[in-house]
Length: 614
Image (cartoon, rainbow, N blue to C red):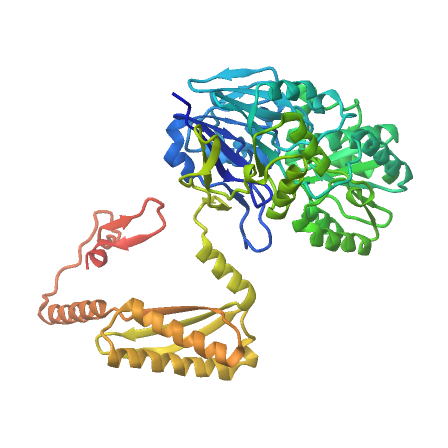
């Protein structure tokens, strides 16, 4: 009986980052990468975005493992949130696994080390329905791997992030012989990186970039502040080498960088000459012309830190006259405007900026020529462009057609789509969907921020908030106290007093109309106030603030209890007989007898038992 084969697009298409795909063979599922992406400016207050964890809720028992291609956040960043709830084996190269542990430990202090399995390019793992093997790829981090799922219908190949660079060092070099071997077994489907598909010109080799970094360091007269991705170990090594050649010492800033560098040094992936690194206190003694400050950030472009340095708000470093800021990474399109703003701040502070991406055509991802070369090498029957925005996937498709592939055999997928292989027709067909929504992380909350919350945050950022507070007596159907209104980020109250007075009158009118014509309902009353205020404020200002009505009710029950208590006390006083004051044996006045107390666990709130019972 032929295997049932599915390719599931969980996330990572029509977007940049958040890579996670899956291959199902019968009742086993092999998850390929589990990454995150960092939000753009439209996701107000969101820290990171991860794939839909509902997939593991539905299919968790079938998942044989999570297989990682490399140690960047777009490949491993979702692991902390997955492993928090699900015990799923994780497979990756030695460096990738160590970086994954760092990532997981950041969110989960206790990690289960038995879930992590170190493999290499020579490993092949046999499962019940399929086997999984690996091959070396070239990326900006050592020991990056491609993944092959061996099925009865052919090989399913996932590249992860890759490029071709014949001059790359051994730990970074693509194994072309292994690719040729995979082709001979017959490639059923190729899931290939599309991130740099629109670039036709070849990327500059890493040797040329290393020489360029040395030239930049030699020509710098003062301090050099290097902005780079912490996990781009290739670039970090080039910076360390250039500093050693030019007689400078390096200060590492940021906890992420320190952990990654220590891990890479321990595993032998980074060569740091003795005496090259310095501490913060050494900045006072080491001359500027002998100083390199390596600044990194979790987003890959540590622009926020650079802005703080330029505005003299950074805790350790302040940019001053003569400093050179060397942006040694290629920023994503989403932050190009921020790069320009940061450069402007640096120049205002007296420094100057050199961007590697403007001087050299460099990328850790395959160019259009690389993609065509891979297709020509593997000769896949079907192609799934992944890891890239929609236009890049379309460009990837067009490049594949030029190599001779049939356009019908290329699938521009969406997140949440699943493709099942039909053995009789020898084709993939769209089948039942899988969970493919975004899960947004805000602080410690996982998935508790949705579209409604984001919409409110967007409105708050644009038009502010308008708050109306009123106290009513619903039984007597009247307003007890004058409504109070205030706003934040909407209008300047002192200059708009008439608007506030008119709003108060509108609130009164709305409440009275509700009392007269409707059966009382808390939700309906608040909705009426909100709707009337929204319409009124828009007519007056052409703005739509978030309107927050707060309706309170006087506590009639408490008033009756207090009146009854006062009446009882008065009657008791009229009939009470005088008693002799008790005396203590030692002559001191006895303490008054207190009511029993109910103390909360925190010990902060004390409530008299009698009042509580009432």
